[in-house]
Image (cartoon, rainbow, N blue to C red; front, side, top):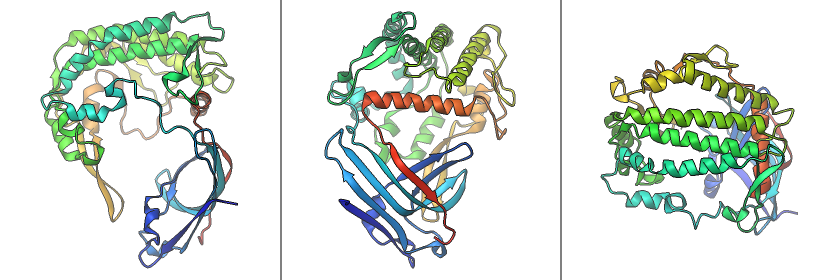
Length: 414
């Protein structure tokens, strides 16, 4: 017995859903296997009315919890979906049952700094004179605090046997979460990531960029105007000013890569990124990449391991001759119109390949931007590592949406 049912019916003369409120209904399905990656969504409009069918299937809300921790179950009965399989649009019927538990709507952020808890309000209060360069200059002050964090995580070392410390659940969910245990390997990787963050801050602080962030960020997502943002960025991309910050960042990069490499070597079966027979290949390949990056810092041009076709990169040249966007004769971004159908078009802010190719290709990487298919890592092993990592987070953060069963059946007649 179900609490509520939604029937999807279409007006085939107009090609639209009969019930307007269903226009706001959103369902997205991502399906992956060894051979395909499919993204599907509820059909809201038939742009070719010849494809239209009146019966779009039914959705039943079988079980509806009222608070976090309680269950929810949704049944799909031959629901019509439009799917994109590597660019090819296709209509399919979807049947199956999803079940899961209700989780809190986000994490508790009331006690965090306003920049983290309510970034939009910070942007709205931002003086119009604030530029990207001034923000990065202020951010340089954070690097000392980041170094203290690096020291904390780096010293959390018990030799690589079991958890070395726990992150209290009250920091992110006082009601339903569990303390998150970190192993020594996890801690080393976090320390390395913080060092790389400090490096990025120093590198960005090397540029005198007069981009006024207030102009296109403070308006909020709903009022974001792509053309204004493009003009602001293209007219004020800035120039390299303090290359000594870039030189200082090299030390952070070296330290960060070394720490991440140590962390990968010390991962265990109960780490957040667990070392298992199925994830071993991904972890080994990441370690190979770290070793190659450290080699490139010292000796220059280095082949990226496991890449096909071959990719060469040069971190030594990057820090010896930092890229200068003011010397590139091209705009970094462009506004392009993207359409999902005849009446569903919008502007989109995209990067310009020529600019970024000229900016970093000579200093950093020998990369053919027109090459259609590069293989760098073992995709199956990396996918398994990602799934196990997020499965571990699920256990502690108390969010999940599993499924009992689901089938996708294609029907040429619909």
